[in-house]
Length: 280
Image 1 (cartoon, rainbow, N blue to C red):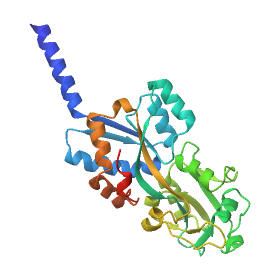
Image 2: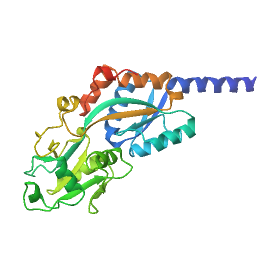
Image 3: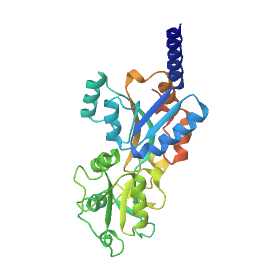
């Protein structure tokens, strides 16, 4: 009788745990403030669900997905072929990709910096170390301090691919552990320049960017990003093992792309997906 009671108790405990719907989210530091907002709002409306969010970078999220150490992997870049291959080894399926928001990847300078706009060629020269003084790009006679992200960051990889054209960052670039830390450094350094998601625009100023010297300078606004006018816009993603894309996890992913979930995107400072991109 005692044994039956214990087994019944364990069964009830497992059923309760299953109902509770614990969801783990790991990856992009760009997305972490949005992921935390989503979790906060969703749990307030669904108290039976517990969502744990942590950052570390897109690469860290993909590694956790491969190792089955997270349910959802947040990413500020698309998954690489090598990462897909590792997932195929781990769970024999390609991860399902969801676009969850839009971002105007911003280039930040100190508020006191007189420079208002730069071209992509000027950014390439600055971040690779060819241009080292602000007076070379229309600023004051003062040295440029380049701030960058760690190489596990999807933002680092996106910026390197789309702005630096695959070239290495300047050897003098100071690597920061997250976008918030990078923005804090730039806000305290009059010669500083760095890059990060649009939602982090606090304490520093986002530059207007030009595709080339003859092009108009474009701000990273919602309208310019949605129309594709801003030169370095991007999607933000969530990846999931298809075997886990059911029940509470599927409900959560559907909610993220709903009007309710997308309103949180705007509150945080990123840009909601157009409605035609919200379908599975």
